[in-house]
Length: 352
Image (cartoon, rainbow, N blue to C red; front, side, top):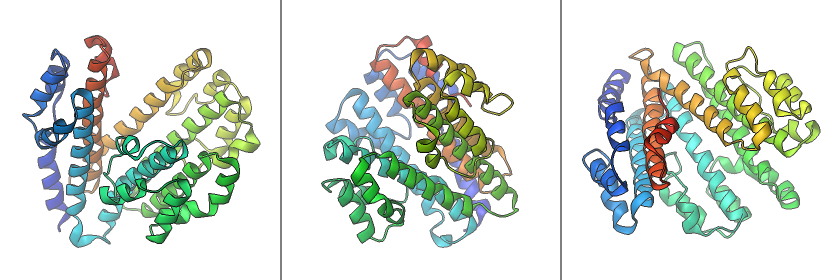
């Protein structure tokens, strides 16, 4: 399929995104039932009708949002069915494969703490290349080892990342070992896939590098809070970052103090989280820092939509823009369910 045709179809999907005024209208609604009724007038109607049969209120909305996200991403992936090995198809799979990693982490975490399959399933978003049927079969396994064994039996690539670390995990029971193995495998795949001198390859390579930076920075901030020393923490740092070399990250871990480590971000694109990191030193709460970093990454991806109109970056940018919409709808539903004021809710939203 011609890339220009794909881009035209995706731009048509862009027109169906909910604008700022629509989001503002949802914020002003009195309750979740009114929000559901309003969303049923949009492209979310089909998923809401299915989800609200078995669920109610915020649970219904969140389930519908997950289903709609997965359906939309699958629709875009199918646009590349006749050119699966093309450069453009590989670029799209980079983004979608990140959902595979997130889903596998969720399953492994759930199995590690003996959550029920139903509880784990509620947190999954089958928007990657591992479809819902595959994820459900993984959920049926009894523990972490069985999940990995089934991946290996099916010949799924992620098993190659996890299998070498089973013994280490068995001894330490530190799931970070498995999660880091998945991240390292994914980022190596992503980085290899965006090599080249094409403009879109350069743009996506920068984005992958930014995500590596964000992942490393979140890891370092957590290690400082937990008192992890350099010898134990260094092996969990990823290579290939765009802005933060490993030398700086090692120094931050060695600092062992959020305030001192935050100063090392001066002059980088991540200086905007310095004050949040310093505040985390006082409060012990890392969630505002993590949220700010996640939002920065999502907005960086969304900015690709406005690049070359004939480039695959239009598709990648749309995937991020749609993720922002779904995230904002989740924020509205959760904040309304928690009884937050309109002003508090507005402050939580992601603005592009």
